[in-house]
Figure 1 (tube, rainbow, N blue to C red):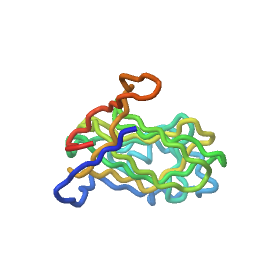
Figure 2 (tube, one colour; figure 1 turned 135 degrees about the horizontal axis):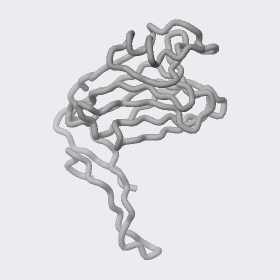
Figure 3 (cartoon, rainbow, N blue to C red; figure 1 turned 180 degrees about the horizontal axis):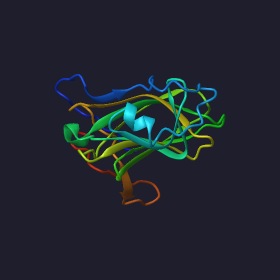
Length: 187
């Protein structure tokens, strides 16, 4: 496993591309979400640029039902290097997987272990003006709750290098390899 040690001259404050709480969606509660799918009506009317499928109000939060999603376009800032931070909660007591996508090429699956609230944060690349950030339940039962979704960019953000298949593996040693991270000066 390779860890990136990134050298930076000075840290700067991240630029917020957007931040969104879901306080405008007050029907239902966290314990008993609304049963009306708002993805083709109220969601886009209330939050410009947002779309979804199987999205329900939950007392100031949103429930994304199984096989549903919540998304918004334009992740082009800083050559598409963004930090996505959100609060999520699986409805199943056994947890589940939250899938965060940046366009069609970048997918991060994050396991939550129970039905408690978690704050997730990932740094990833690949955003363009026509790229969306998308959150969806994956391998869950009854969906996931979402609150406080924020996307930021900074020249100081660097994604974790992606491990590649090692070379020269002989049973006692190997040569590690990873995909280059744009902007990294050393590993």
